[in-house]
Image 1 (cartoon, rainbow, N blue to C red):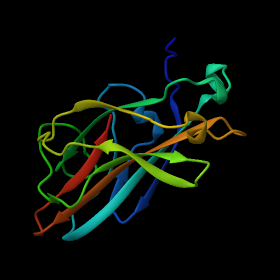
Image 2: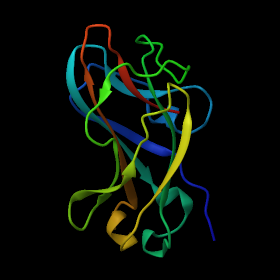
Image 3: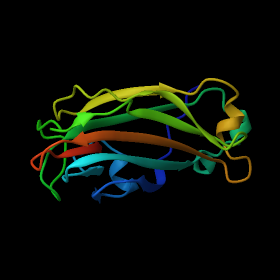
Length: 169
């Protein structure tokens, strides 16, 4: 059986970035309210949006989970801060390395790569899903019943006019 996902209950931004916007609430529905992280300054930056889900609200124990898939609606945008969204204005910086999607493995205390975000969205929202493989219990905190996913933006803004944000709807 598939159980509808719980809404995220927290987001933490880490790494190097100039601006963030929104809260975990903006990552709950396809409603044009956005969670974002990025920069409009020259240079390379790598930032992470770590989103935490507490599965206790589903009424099941994490040890009973038989599949774990993270679905995300996102884009890479060059919109002006603070009005950042998926409005058809693609990021003007250059991707550096992979734009990883990772799940936290509580047993090894490490982030495990599930896949990569595409960067060819031209500022238009796209939807992708990423499935956890391996021992699922390792990706669910046994005491808090939480699971975490991380979305990466790793970009180079080469000139002063470059603007690059990872936007999650």
